Amino acid sequence: MRNVNALLLSLVMVVVLLAGCGGNKNNEPASSQASTESNVSPSENAPTSESNANVYPENGLSKDEKVTLKMGFWEAGSGRAWMDLAVKKFTEKYPNVTFDITSTPTLSTILEPKIAAGDDNDMFDLFIPNFSAAGQLERLAKAGKLEPQDDLWDRDLPGETGKKLRSVISDDAYDTSLSMGFTARVPIAGYTAGLFYDQKLFDEKGWNKNPATWDEFVALLDQIKADGVIPITFPGVYAGYLTDYVFNTIQFDLAKANGTFDTYIKNFRSFTGPQLTTAENKEAWKRLYEFGKKGYFPAGVAALNHTQSQMQVLQHKAALVSTGDWVGNEMKESTPEGFTWGFMAVPASNDANQTIFVNSGVGDTAFVIWKNKPDQNKKWAKEFILSLYDFEIQESIAADAGAFPARLDFGDDPAHIAKLQPTQAAVMAYATKHNVQYISYRREFGLTSPEHGQADKLLSELITAAATGKKDPSSVLEEAEKLKQIAIEKDRPKK
Image (cartoon, rainbow, N blue to C red; front, side, top):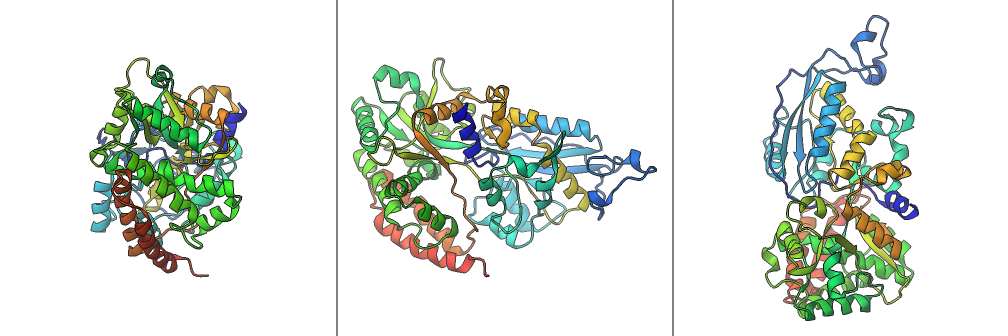
């Protein structure tokens, strides 16, 4: 239980619907209702004896005004069962509210044209900010297009009078929520990521499921390759799966081993000094490139999408896949009988007691509210977001979505822990055997300048080139660093 709670207390949560995973498109329209604008805040709606029956006592909002909330839902690998439950519970409690939901794994193709059109009436009231363009969320925040949600932190949790939302959210998640100068979104759930595999296959082959050092890890990959199996696969179409979930953590492992972690992470968070050309990051990319030259990745990896790469592990064509803990839920229909997910991260040094960093999702996706909407719609959107912290919804996030719930107190009850899916259990089991520290890639501010996008494009193209042994990363990292520093200088908040 100590390790379970340590995991849940360490994870910094956001919506798990993430990191480039697909689902089924399913638009669920609801009947349109007229939305009435109101400039009266819930605190100003203190009900009198005459009006008491016409407002909800917990928020002061009218029971009589009909409101339809248009929602853009990014239906990723975690599915939408938990969201269906949340909407059902909310509309039963507040029958004057209905939802018009657009649910799709390609939400960005709908969001971006809507934003470009500039029609506030056609825009969603609340949506998961799934964009293909780098820095789009930050640009919207700077342009004043997103409604602040800061007031939610001091609200009571659903059905828990006196227990504030802020009290059950980690400091890291809270800081991430404020990274744009205000609370544009609040975390609902989170994920962990790394290398996932079939425990049964590893047992049959006698492969090491818990390499404790870098040399042991490399020896494992050599043994897998010698047995005629691809050591590591990843989706080249979404190449960031390999760096974000595995190799980008190596820089933190090395900094920890060098005794410079506190300074390193401070500089990383605040964009102080080099970002891509630190000795630690260059070493991480060098190792990726060396793996590419050794043939540890699939030859045709550039054409693989996320489900295809995950299928390679299900079919035992590859041993390890770089992905997130949603993989069990996403691939459940294709998982053969007897297949049991296992998890490992990369030990970067040869100290068997080293700290091994594991990526945990934070700030990637969460509900935002469009600023230029009727006041009453925005208030009800906030009420809905707050309702997602109800324990029944958080349990569904664990059981149905295969994600870690955002509430820090979720692990206080063993019955809640029992709701977690096998992939999360695999991560926890790994944490009991190693000195694991969870880390997010959150920053203190976002980058929106064109140079930032140019740098990220160079890095994205470099991943598969390095992983196939075709491109030494050194020169590209230098070029991308120059662009990144220009963006940092342009985008750093002025004091």
